[in-house]
Length: 184
Ligand SMILES: *[C@@H]1O[C@H](CO)[C@@H](O)[C@H](O)[C@H]1NC(C)=O
Ligand SMILES: *[C@@H]1O[C@H](CO)[C@@H](O)[C@H](O)[C@H]1NC(C)=O
Ligand SMILES: *[C@@H]1O[C@H](CO)[C@@H](O)[C@H](O)[C@H]1NC(C)=O
Image (cartoon, rainbow, N blue to C red; front, side, top):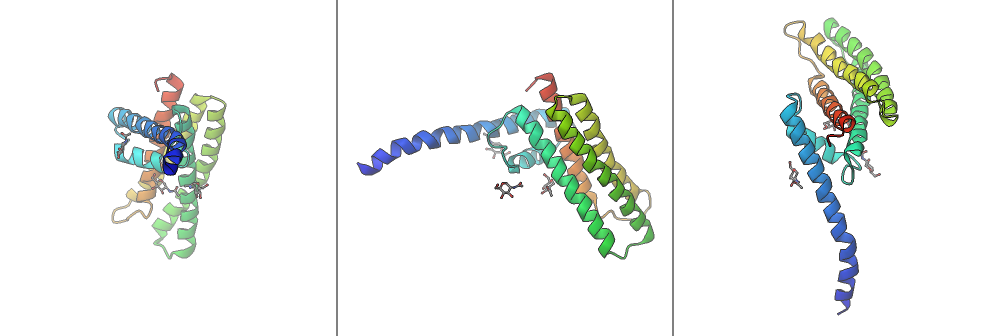
């Protein structure tokens, strides 16, 4: 009987907890489904995996997802900037690649500043301004990657990272749109 008397109080905590997790997953899944159907830049699996891995995403609202997606962009951009610095320092690069990396470093430095601005605008509910900043981060990743493509036979060492940033910004733009239009 003793274990039974523990069972009830415990389940009172665990069941709502499980329900909350399921609802948050539902939110992420259904949101990502909508995005992937309306935006060709968003892959469903990328969207759900990224959002579900984020801290705090298991108990949140659409508004919270906006904040989380901006934080993901922030962390990715900051990490990529650091990584480019590291590549420049450690590598003996072909001069053309070295120049591209320098351009990318500048683009990602600008991008970190833009994400910080975007987060401030988002908190102030200035969604159009936040949108402009995040769009410029997206363009930055594209411009960085395109630099390497301009010369034949050159392989970008940043393709995967640029792609992550591109997709994360696409997700952030879609979430912000959803928050702004109240369609979540
Ligand atoms: C959400 O999607 C993931 C994989 O995409 C799946 O494993 C999970 O069961 C889904 N959760 C809900 C509540 O539908
Ligand atoms: C960047 O985003 C990708 C995709 O969500 C993730 O796999 C990766 O761990 C992130 N990197 C950092 C440093 O946050
Ligand atoms: C999530 O939070 C835990 C505990 O606070 C921390 O150890 C972990 O580094 C965080 N992960 C990310 C990706 O921020």
